[in-house]
Amino acid sequence: MTDNRNILRIDASARKAGSSSRAMTDALVERLAPDNIVIRDLAVALPFVTENWVGANFTDEVERSDAQKAELAVSDTLVAELFAADILVIGTPIYNFGIPAALKAWIDMVARARKTFHYTANGPEGLLTGKKAYILVASGGTAIGSEIDFATGYLRHVLGFIGITDVTFIAADQQMVKGEAAVETANEIASEHVEILTKDAFSVMTKIKNAGAIFIGEYSSEPLGDYFAGPNHVLPTNGTAKFFSPLSVDAFYKRTSIISYSREALASAAEDIAEFAEAEGLTAHAKSIRVRFE
Image 1 (tube, one colour):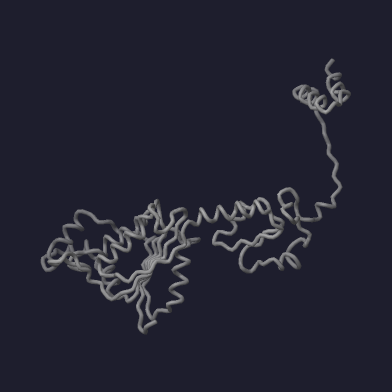
Image 2 (image 1 turned 180 degrees about the vertical axis):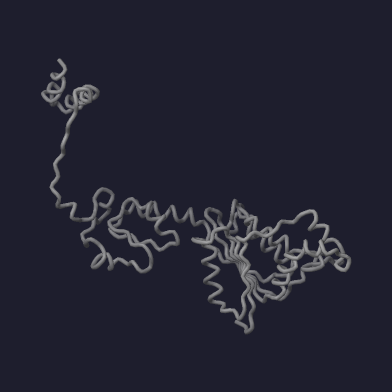
């Protein structure tokens, strides 16, 4: 780690709360411990490239009108942030196999000829050299580096195009796929204890159908439920949570069923009841139903 590091942080997730890419970026930035940090949150929408923007960009800088300078003002600010940074940290989800539109808008604002790249006799050359980039990627179903991942390859290419070639990807991919598989496994095992340590723990909890006790969060470990916060330590074991519940005061309640049908209500179900009774060989039960309508 070098001193006097300036970080430019780009958050591309539309979600403010519960975002995996933002959580990953938080952790990395904390570890990098920068001297200075500029945060560009793309949930606050950037402008898209327009005809006037293109016209202003292709006009020589000394010949631009005040209106054209105003058209490029946001882009100029974003480019200046990039040049001032030693380290670029981008947190992004994958939306529909690619990057979010907000991140594409940022790229379109900073990938500018004669500003962040120029053309030479040997082809385009990036002007943002000597910088390090970390890209933290979260996805629901897309595997990073797979044939349906159109995000990471594009980001590596476009950053290299403007001169940032030292790029490291950190991925938390296929969260929905892996998460659903974990839920299915938990329901199949039907354990007496299930601990959920995820961002959306309460949402995951609703999918756990077979468990003696569910512990949510890093501060809700099994002994807490066993000895203090839970109803008791008598839980269904060996997969019996599929059809048994934990011991509770409900197990000691004495219950009685109360049934009251009208003639009309019984008539609508009489034959079904009689057939069930006959199927069990209890003909007297069947007759006790039918006799009421003779």
